[in-house]
Image (cartoon, rainbow, N blue to C red):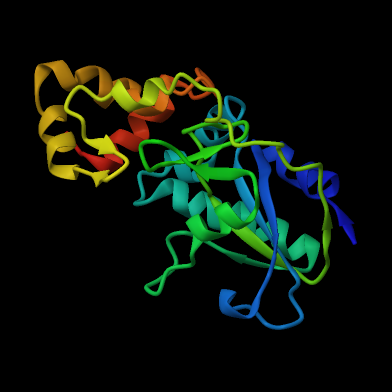
Length: 217
């Protein structure tokens, strides 16, 4: 068995952290010898300046964050004797959202997005590592973070693009084209920012980077 703290120790210099652990099963697509899947996420706000100092962030190439993630998490996987996989792999794509739910640390929020026990609606998964060992991890949260919450996320979107019935991408992007949508475009999604869990953990520059990838201006 490997301690999660050992994996976190390898992730920390890169501004990354373990955001979930789950037992691998036959449907996950890994070799039978691989017993555990470890989800890796940004440890914000430490993550952004470390990524910005990387070669990938400054070389003007395409998909700098995906390339950085594959290099860094791939190296960590080798050190642990595991196999790294990424959300950008595919098609077919790895079921990261299902893995997040199975980890017991991420849940479906009232607006349909995943909400994480500490990262809130800002949770993102830069990669996962499948390991031949079980992982000794801290206790799981006693309850989802939305229990007892006033749920400000439900009313945060000015055009109601995010609801429990789905995501209206067209309405979202149309709003971003308006002058009133500038705050979302440069500071990040108002729904994600409304979540009390992990609030203010993500730098505006990082949110703007992701918004440009979603909706280039």
